[in-house]
Each structure stands twice: as structure tokens, then as C-alpha cells.
Amino acid sequence: MMKNFQVKFTAKNLTGNAGLVHFGKFADKLQLPKTLTKILSNKRGPTADYEVANVVMMLMMGVLAGIKHISHLNIRRQDSVIRKLFNWEKFPDNRTFGRLFELFNQKHCNELHQVETHCREKVWSKKWFGRVTLDLDSTVIGVNCSQEGAAKGFNPKKKGQNSYHPLLCFVAETRECLHSWFRTGSAYTGNGAPEFIKECFSRLPKRVWKVLVRADSGFFNGALLDVLEEKNSEYLIKVSLRNLASLLMSQKWQKVKGKKGIESTEFFYQCHGWKKKRRLVAIRKRVEVDSLEQTLFPLPQYEFFCYVTNLKISPWKVHKCYGQRSTSENWIEWCKNHLASGTIRTQDFWANSAIFQTSILAYNLMVWMMWLNTKNGFHQEPNTIRAWLIHVPAKLISRARQLILTLSEDYVFKERWLEIESSISTLNFA
Image 1 (spheres, one colour):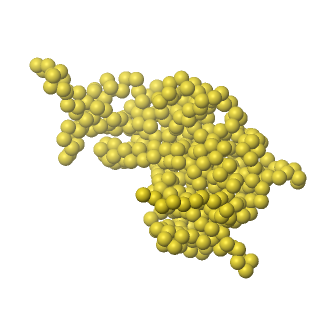
Image 2 (image 1 turned 135 degrees about the vertical axis):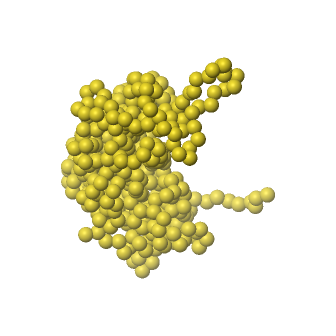
Image 3 (image 1 turned 90 degrees about the vertical axis):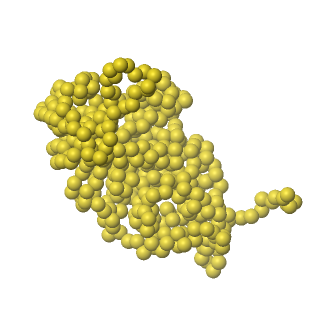
């Protein structure tokens, strides 16, 4: 049975999100606020209360802290500790946030991409991969109102619902989102894929010398393959053909050593509209038939997996390599549901695009900070990182003109906090 107690709202200088200071320090090391100010061209007048760059940073920190809607920024607005540490004397209300993001147009959204690329170059100057795997995918973001650009399209969960259909590209080795397009819901998965992948390559750090691109059947497109071959890229894309079943059944199959009921085949095939033949590899898996449905002479039934690729490895290894791509669906889930990509919206399409990109930038900031400043890198999902690192109670004390953030002596993750704090303090970018 609980003891009797009283509640008084008299404490001052308290915060429940002390861990945001790590992200603020890391962003300063990257010079992210200065880069936003320098590159974003939607400047405001000299008497304006809020700079666009500051508003982007405010939203990023709000997303990292777990907001899902613009109205949730009320909680961040009342956090006097975070506002003082980030030097945010003024903090816009909900309507002002929406109005400020409505200043964004397509040009300004492209500038946000430039800011992200600039930061990525700095991060990759410290730690990098020469070979990377790019996973292309799209996702559906349903809306309940009539936001600009929302339209009916592919929506497996709620058919007929208006939605947006963003296109994303992740770097498998780091889990960061390399590039994104915020698109109307009526856009097909692979729409604009050749142009999108060109932009992806332009955003890769110069240290990358070899690229493998993986994608599902929505990206089975001859024009995309032409671009990848022009870039001397390796690719592995799931095949989508109307006559695929009959084409595969006509091939010669071989058993895969050590894999019961699994066979493989490979052949060259030129689809309609292609400039040349390309290598197709396939795996088929024997499917057990229900004993109640068996006939006197049952025909074997198979589950097929087919890919177009220029990888010089066996069909079974191709199949296993493609299977690793499924983890990108987790990263999309993290961006959408853990970091509010697409759930914070206005009525304006380009404002929504800018908010979406800001959320993606917040996700990447978390990826980069954990990658550079922890021994294990970025392995936990964002909600887990938020629970042990960001949602930390603390009190701000001013003593001898110095600000001191005091945490509980029983804080469980003290060593990890100190590890990140020490690493960031010694981190310098050229």
C-alpha cells in the first residue's frame, strides 16, 4: 500500500530530456545550425522573431525526443532547461511552426538535402566504407484529411485512403538514409527511379568506390538498370514479369547442395524495351501439398524467387544476399513510427516535404552520433536509444556563472552517457 503524499508544482529548472544535450553538442560539432543558416535561402526579415534554421533545429530535437504531432511541441516549449541550454529564448507556438514550414518550396527542400550531404561528408571523413550497399524502397503514409498532394494509390493496409508515397534509399552498412523523395500517393513505386538513383550516387561520399544496389520488384526497370551499368554499379533486383512462371518452368534446374527441396537456375534474358540480355537467377522451393488434396499422380508445386543481377556469385548466394535487404524495412519503420517521418503534417505539400526531410535528418543525426561516438555503433532501435539516453531527468543549476546539469546518482547508464560525452568533446572535423 502506498504512503500518503502531496503534489506541488513548485520545482524549477527540471527537464525530462537531458540526453538531448548530446545531440545538440554533436550537431554543433558538425556545424549543422550554421550550415542550415548558410544554405537555406528562405531568409526572414531583420525584425522576425524566428530564423528558419532555428525552427528546423527545434523540430529535429522535438522529433528525437519523441513528438508525433506539432501540438506535442507544447511539451518542448515548456522545457525551460532545454531552451536555455540550446539558447532558444523564443519558441514558436504550433500555428507559427506550421506557418514557418509553409515558407518552404521545392528549392528549399533541395537545400535541406544539400545540408544533409554536407554533414555526411564530415561524418564519413572520420569513419567510412569503400564498398556500400544501397537499399531502395518506398513506403505508404496514409492521411485522414485532404492534404495537398495526398492521393489514392497503392495502400495495402487501407485501400482507397489518401496517402503519400515517399521513395527512400538506405546505406546498409551504416543504416543511414542516404536520400528521399516525398511523393504524392498516386506515384508508382519505381516512378522516377533512374533520376532518383543518380541523385543517390551524387550524395555518396567520395571515399566510396564500389556500390551494390538492391531493390524489390517495384524497381524492375530497364532504364534503372541502364543507369546502374553506366555507373559501374553492382545490382540485385527482384524480377517482375507477367510470364515469369512459364519462363522459369521452361529452364533447367539443379539441386542446391545441402538444401533439401531447393533448386536453382540461371539464364540470360532480354525483356521488352531492354537494350540487351541480362543475367536472371532463380531459386525454387518445393512446397508440400496437403495430404487431403493429393491426387494419384500429384504434380510438384514450387515457390519461386527470381532476380536480375550482375553479381558474379551463385544463385543461392544471390538469394541470401537479397534476403538481407529485408532489414531496410525496419529502418523505414524507425523513420516513420519512431521519428515521426510523415506523421507531422500541414495542409501544404512542400511544407510536409520539408518536415519529412527534417525528421529524416534527425534520424541520420542519431545514426551518425551513435556510429562515431559509441563502441557498438547504431544497433538499438531509436525508441530504445530514446529510453536510455534522451528521456533522462535532470536539474539545471547555475553556480559561479557556470551551468551544471545534475542527473540522478542512480542513473543506470552513467558509463554510456560519459562515453558519448567524452567522445563528442574530443571530436573535431576539418
